[in-house]
Structure formats: structure tokens, C-alpha cells
Image (cartoon, rainbow, N blue to C red; front, side):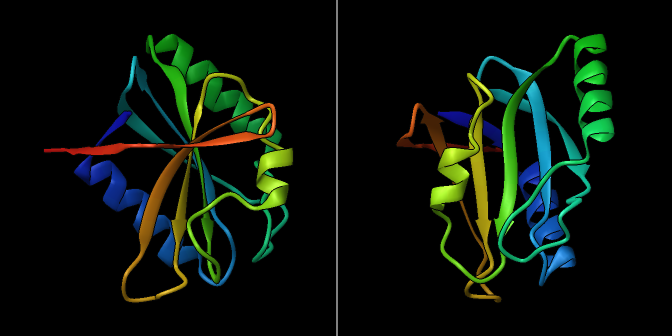
Length: 133
């Protein structure tokens, strides 16, 4: 389970919509299973079917999270034209341990779908999203 405040989930979905037709990406920070901060990132690949976070931005976010007493809880990205489930590439590149992966699908443009997963060692497990507030 991961708890995400409704305003942060809305901001993630808005980021995905504003970035359409390209994939967007970012990091959610917090403690335990509770998200407290949203950090949109630059998709340096500027692609509609994969993403790569800007390494300098990623380092700065991790440093800021540590300074604020938070940890990286969620890595998110969008799927502009496919369902909210990890692709084979998403699974292969899920190398950060102990984080959830949130995927926002814009396949049905008027009804974005957000789903979370735990991806470790090639295994994918759905994770419940609790929307707080």
C-alpha cells in the first residue's frame, strides 16, 4: 500500500497530461508508506514510449529528500497511449530497490488511470493506492 495525498496525485496526473504526447517522469518522497512531496523530472529521452530521468535533477532530488528527512518512495511515469501496467522495458529498468512504481495511463484521454506496482527481480506485484484527503 502507498498513501498519496489527492493534491499530489492530481499534480502527477496533470504533469502527465501537460506532457502529452511524451512520457513524463518524476519522484514522490515521504516516509514509511505515506507520500509527502512531488518532484517532477525532465524526461531526457523526450519520447512517447520510454523515459530517462535527468541524472543531475535526480541527484538533486535525492539530496533534497535526505535533507528534509524523507526518502524516495515512488518513481512515476506516464504511458501516453498504453495501459497503466509496466512494459517489459519498465520491468527490465526497475533497478531502484524498495520503491513503488506509479504509472499514469492516458490511453483514454478523458479518464486518466493511475496504478502502482512493486517491481523487483523481474517480478511485478500490484500495490494499492490509498488517496488521502
